[in-house]
Image (cartoon, rainbow over all chains, first blue to last red; front, side, top):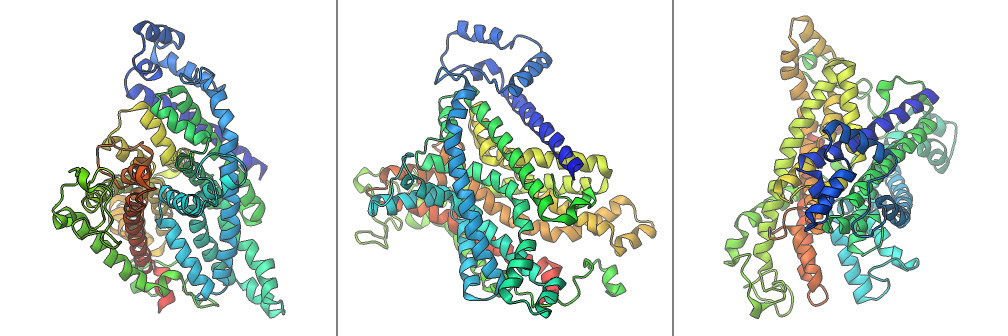
Length: 313
Length: 306
């Protein structure tokens, strides 16, 4: 098991290296990176100075090596907008985003587990129907639209919660609800299916046969086995949530890293954008590693299984 | 399983033919009405996208400042001249939504085609070309997971000039993974199945087996994924347009309409609300159709139904 996790960690570094390489390739595909790195309308002298500073007059191979070594140290240069290192600017905004993502993750896991397992325990029941409708709606409604409608109803009409900013718990409610909607919808479906599957196992029949109550069967046997699929899914969920956070932060003017990244795109503040993209790749890769370790802990069968049976990580 | 089933390539994994202890009542089975709802919605939306602007005889770009923020026909004060009302520049929302929906659908189809072909090819390669190719494509999957569509779109918007090509490129580059996974998995299990072995022992070449057995048998899941991916792409495209990461803002998109409508939302809620409804309806309809197709094409639910 340790060896397998070690292999994942090696893969993880290779993935990050590839992401940075792709970013470098995109920069060069778009033309002269010096033009992209300076704000529009800069002095030609400034451009020349920057070209020298970043070694852009050297060969592509050398440029690549220095780009990689800078990227590993988290050095993507100085933000044009904030006159600070790009990594400082992004890292300052990251906690707000992680807070948003964390609450949404918690909300979606708790609500989807509850609804999904109740639905899976009684297929065809009232809860099942409600869960199905919620799941269909949550997967169809665009997050940015849901957020806008929540603002319109709860902030403008009723005045219950602020429509923007990040001051206190009440300002978190609408963004977290918006962000959690899609992952909850996907998770409900998944939990329901794996609960229904788990009920079909022989050990459930055995447990019932030896006289366990239905709630004990659910808690002791079904829930544990039904949890494996959603746990393995948590890594993908992290990607959903981070990408969703960008949208939600924009809708609610929430001062997180996603909003910063979008502002940096319109400011053409490339160092900040590159830092943000790299940071999110690191976040998602770590979340996948955590999900993988959790899956191995939750499902002893996988520990000795052929690598073939493993999911992607 | 009979020999005839082997020869016709009907594949069932071991154990699935056994009757489950509890009756399988999956959602898609109970809600077979969902398929019909999905199809009717899809036809309605297609007709709307195709002839919408003609129905109201309005140019989607024409500004009519005397008729700004008029109510939709279903509200007090609205008229059938503008069935969905007008925006803050007096442009007809019905016509604009139809044009925006066309754009969404076109992007959805284009991306699904490109990503689908790429994913199917990579999946087949991964399953049939040995462990090195398998590892490599698996690695590519991991790289893609580390950069979700919205994040890649941010990088692309900062680096490239905005345009339809960039949007399609970003969404195709992030959309092939689900095809690859499914085709790889089904192909692997098909390769181990008796009818493929029979074909091989009768001298079937690799290309023959891929064309006659592997592709047709993984087509079902691929069609299901493709249906639902059109929906996912429409959602992503709308989000990118809303965020200003998509096509230039003079192109009419549903996401862009929601973004522009926010400026008017205090006076006229329908301006941002209605385009979002169009997106949600399209996605819902495609997801329902996908669920219905899954029921028809998945042999597992076929056994459950009989």
